[in-house]
Length: 113
Length: 115
Image (cartoon, rainbow over the protein chains, first blue to last red):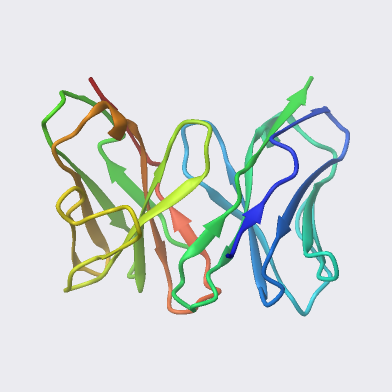
């Protein structure tokens, strides 16, 4: 069945370093992916998205890479800051075009001062 | 973008009682959803709140336990009925525009503790 999963449940990085959060998906027909950030006590916040006709998309300090060959995407955060500490989820719409999102299990990013 | 608010932000309830959670969006959205999130876990979709008709529930969730209303395009409620400690969780609502790839925005969540 469809699934979106993450490799690492917790990632600890030094402030100022770059962070890479990974996500694997199983459906080769998936054509749209979203990254959300969820800070403690808050709802998920949209960070960036990417369509399958792209390999890379950049935002402010964030880059998403999509490797369709191995069905893998990653979120890269440059110069990680304490405010980046949160849980990060990848998500994709269900293939039934129902608008419903399938969320990965999440990765907790801890930024060490 | 859409700003979504929820009330209450948290509550502590007794077993056997019911709680209604309100979700308000600051602009009209086509789709509204309700999710449950156990501490330290991912989001699980409970149902799609349909405007003017019965909600569409995901496997494992039923209307008697989680009745949902959506009287208009900006407001929805989720009731957690006959609560048990297993219902302790964070409940989140979300809203999305007209396209499948429109951004889905989330409310801040309602943290429910059932004693």
